[in-house]
Image 1 (cartoon, rainbow, N blue to C red):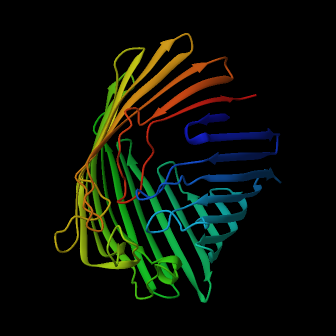
Image 2: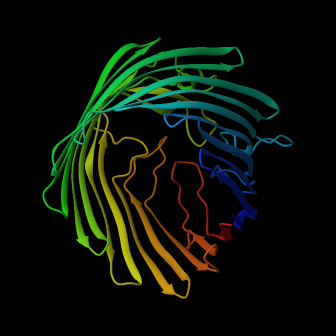
Image 3: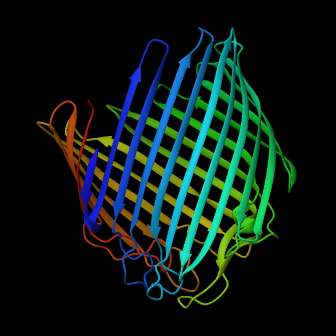
Amino acid sequence: MVEGGSYDTWRAGATIAHRGDRGGLSFSLNRVQTDGFSARAAGTEPDGFEAWQLNFLGEYQATDALTLGLSGFYLDAEGDFDEFGGDGAPPFDEVADTRNRGLRAHAELALGTVTHTLSASYFEADRLFTSNGIDTRFDGTRTRFDYQGVYQQSAAMTFTFGTDWEEETFESGADSGDTETLGVFGELLYAPNDALDLSMSLRWDDHSEFGSNLSGRLAAAYRLSDATTIRAVAATGFRAPSLYELNSTLYGNPALEPEESLSFELGIEHQLGGGSFIEATAFHTEIDDLIQFVTLTSFPLPFTGQYRQVPGTSTSQGIELSGEWVLDDRFTLFGNYTYTDAEDATGAQLLRVPTHNALLGLGAEFGNGWGGDLSVHHVADRAAEFGVPLDDYTVVNAALRYDVSDRVQAYMRLENLFDEDYQTSAGYNASGRAVYFGVRGTF
């Protein structure tokens, strides 16, 4: 794949793979670079970005029962950013250098009705932020071991069980921290008849800083007919604050406590025939002690922020609608809409959760290898951030493609067709009108 376009943006990627009787091996290499645009609305200079990423995956079937695998990646990225007040003071630039790398090894052993999977993984992140000539480092690691067993009791019943252990470390200047989490889980899938599927799961976590927690999930799907299915889910959740949220030099808050949540969903899906369908889901979520990033000083003057706990119970409830209607053999109408009523314990709207989020699109197949789509995305009614109101916005995107052959496709992509001036987060720019051309192929 090769692509180029607005903001002097270039992307390229290639994957090579080989598959044999007992295994396979694949490598992929991706490159992206762009001059970009100013990340901050108050900025005037563009903020560029460039990155290389290498991935590999290998699997080998040592015996009929045993499969071994190894995967990994390496990322080298450099991106410009704007300091809080806008552009940096000359001659200094704000630059973030990132080096991420990871490895995962796994072994799968199939013994009759039980399949065992063992895996070990290691991830390392090194980040260097330079602003006005001052360097700030952030280095983190994550080490993880997993065991999962799957017992196929019958065609109607499957039991999954296992345990995992994870250690995370964090170091930034004089600040550092580490946590360990031990987890045990089990899930039962049961289909008492052709119309009903049931799922029941429990998970116990023991966190080195925040103690133990038990969470669970119940789900059911019932087919009223071949065309109509109703679904229901009830779940509890637990999220400990990350090491960055706790220990970051600029934004960390060591007083943070875990979030706990309770959620419900009820949905229905109906197949209209010919590939057309409609779906509707009602949801309700309660989160105790929600963790959010908040500003501590005025905006848009230079300000500081911190991760803070939202006191009490925050709620998010609403409805999601989605569907696709195949008009004929050339045109397909698709869309989705989400209405969300999200409030904290005081009744104030939660940050960065719009009340209305809608997308409507039309896909087309013109024949002779030509196709394309046009979509309209509208977001409305968002809470002000840092005292700055966020306007509603509507963005139109379009794409055109041509199948040069069975293996090669050329395409053009237009983003923000009418050059809408909008912000997804207060004080931060989004792309203006942009056009990209590319070619992708399989050989």
